[in-house]
Amino acid sequence: MKPRTQEYKQRATSSAEAYEVLILGSGTAGKLLSWTLSKAGMKTANIERKYVGGSCQNIACLPSKNVIHSAKVASYFQRSEEFGITKDNFKISMSAVRERKRKMVKGLIEVQLDFYEKSGAELVWGSGRFVEPKTIEVTSPEGSTRRLHGKRVVINVGTHATIAPTSGLAEAKPLTHIEALELDYVPKHLLILGGGFIGAEFAQAMRRFGSRVTVIEHNPRLIHREDEDVSAALEELFRDEGIEVLTNTDITRVEGKSGDLVKLSGTRDGAKLALEGTDLLVAAGRTPNTDGIGLEAAGVETTTHGYIKVNERLETTASEVWAVGECAGSPQFTHISENDFHIVHDNIFGGHRTTIGRQVPFCMFTDPEYARVGLSEREAIEQRVPYRLAKIPLEAVWRARTLSETRGFIKTLLDTESDRILGFSIFGVEAGEVLATVQLAMLAGIPYTTLRDAIWTHPTMVEGGLIWLFNNVPPAPVSASQQVVAHA
Image 1 (cartoon, helix red, strand yellow):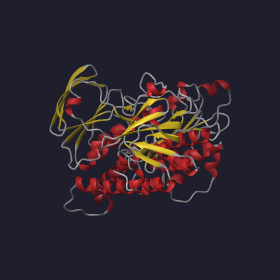
Image 2 (cartoon, one colour; image 1 turned 90 degrees about the vertical axis):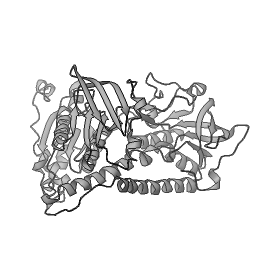
Image 3 (tube, helix red, strand yellow; image 1 turned 135 degrees about the vertical axis):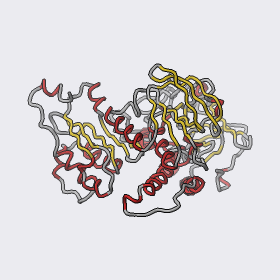
Image 4 (cartoon, helix red, strand yellow; image 1 turned 180 degrees about the vertical axis):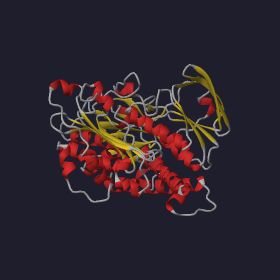
């Protein structure tokens, strides 16, 4: 997408142009810093090579949720008789699904460009690399170059899908989330490498569009960093929807081309395994976009995994150079990148905001959704944090019954002495919305009893879920020894 106004055109120069703030990458944190600092009177330039506004609105969060919602509508058609509706001639048009997504993305890009224009921040199109400390050489799409120097510099270059060095994998030209969102056909048999959030969301969506889907996961279970009951619930959901799940599986060789025929060879639980499919999607981790951007010339160090080293203020090893978002190793969520913006913004103006102790809420947008904030049971046990556990099935929530969406559960971990909420998880309809209410209580440090005793609108998921959940809290342990094993 090329900029609309003359102000955004490249200007060739033989010497470095001076800016008060120079930002490499226009992801969530980068663009917000550009707009706000420029409005504050600082001469600001934001360098972007392709996706104005970053990956979230172009190729990740928002377009994927757009496509996922189309898949949910398709699932309602498939269940139509359950709701008393007869369907005829039901079919999927992936080109129409794609066009709906593209229309949304186009509108979002226009909004971003308006913000740049109104804020006065300069949007510089091209690929940037450091050539000196705080100095970036930008090569435009047409091949011209210019050098920009910033009194302060922020790096916001993001990550990309990891393509493992498995024999034949790169040559098979597998889909990543980017290409998967541009499909104009329904894959006959989609093989997905990776059972994390991205793999799970695409698996269900493509199955609902009509693909045969096989998910291949190296670890013993799907979304393996979450509690075992969450993984089990997701696997049961997939089994019921006809998605094949292969855990404890290692792929050692790939043959063929995605979109035609791919063959996978490997092992599962130590036994040899061979798989065939028409399409291959890789969703097994992320790699930071830090190679080839001259970080050595900038004095910016990286970790052994390629992420930029930062402290709790998101400062790098170079003076007055910050890194934000996924390239800095921040949790890979847009809302965390936005929080990174607040941290750097405050610190530029003399504050002392840090990443220490910040909450990281998240939601996986399968149907039903899975959302969590605070400690999981696994984390509490590993950290030896005593807790009380309350858990209810979603069928206990009457709003879920009105929606015919009773799959799932809600659970919470409570402090054994103060009644504060240590963690909250929900696998169920509207999970992301319910989560927000509990997170506010956690931020305020109020006891769970405040939510239990509040008057909530009936029938809603918040009302039914929280009242039933918090009325099923076990009594607090009466001794220190009981507190230590309260999670057992």
